[in-house]
Length: 289
Ligand SMILES: Nc1ncnc2c1ncn2[C@@H]1O[C@H](COP(=O)(O)OP(=O)(O)O)[C@@H](O)[C@H]1O
Ligand SMILES: [Mg+2]
Image 1 (cartoon, rainbow, N blue to C red):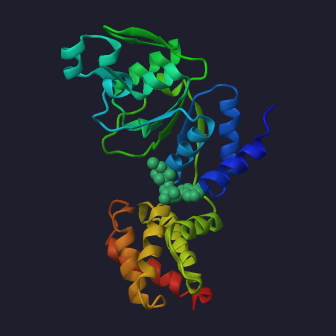
Image 2 (image 1 turned 30 degrees about the vertical axis):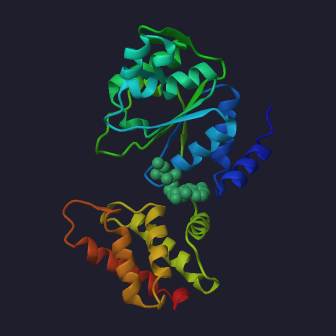
Image 3 (image 1 turned 90 degrees about the vertical axis):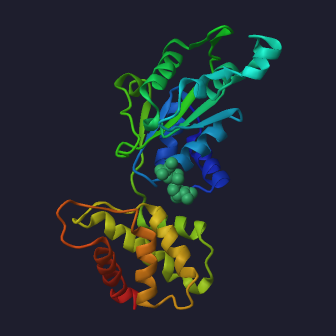
C-alpha cells in the first residue's frame, strides 16, 4: 500500500494545486498499479495543471507533447535529421528521438496533452506502443519499453474544433479520471492565486466566481465559463480605480466572458445582454452591496 495522503499533500504543496484531493488520490492509486491515466474534463477544469504536476512528481524523466491536428507520427516517435543523415548515414546519431520513443527507452512518463486533437493515424502508433510495449523505428531499431514507462493524457470530450474522436481501442488502454468544476470556495482560492490582489479587494474574486457560476447554470447558455473567465475578469477589475462601479464590472465581464460562453440556439437575447443581466443580478445581491 502507498501512503496516498502524504503524496497528495506533497503534490498540492509543490505545484500549488488547490483541492483535488480525491482526484489526486485516484491518480496515485492508478499509477501505483502501473496503469496509464486519462484525465477528462471541460476546458479550464485543471486537466493540464494536474497532469503536468503528477507527471513531473512521479518521474523526473517526463516528456510532454501538446497535440494538434498536425501532430503526426514523427512528432511522437522521432525522425532522421536530413543534414545529419547526409553527413553520417542512417545511424543512431542522426536520429532525433520524439517523446514516445524517449519515454519508452528511459522508462519515463509520457504526458500527452489534449489527446483528442491527435489524428487517428498517430493514435495507432500509440496503441501498439501501449499494447505490445515495443516501437519499431524503420532503418534504426526496435525499442522495447522499459517497465516503468507509462502515459498520462488529457481529454476534452466536448471540444469540437480540430478534434478526432479518441478511438475506442485507445480509450480501452487507460484508467479514466473525471474532473468536474471545483467548489466555489476552491475556485475563489484559485482566482486569488492567479491574480495579484490588494487586501481591500476581497470582493473581487468572490463576485467574479459567482458570475461564472451563474453562466454555467443559465438555461440560455449552452457552455458556461471556465475558471479562466473569472481569472481574466478579476485581473481586469484590479486595474480599475473603482472596483464597486457597475459599469466597470459589466465592461470587464463582457471582455472576459464574451468568447468563453456559447449560447443555446434560438435565444432572443444577445451575449452582451445576457452577460450584463448576470452581472447586475450578482451585484444587486445584498451581500455585495
Ligand atoms: N486545482 C487547481 N489549483 C490551482 N490552479 C488551478 C487548479 N485548477 C485550475 N487551475 C488554474 O486554472 C487555469 C486553467 O487550468 P488548466 O489546467 O489549464 O485547465 P484545462 O487544461 O482543463 O483547460 C490555470 O491557470 C490553472 O493554473
Ligand atoms: Mg489544458
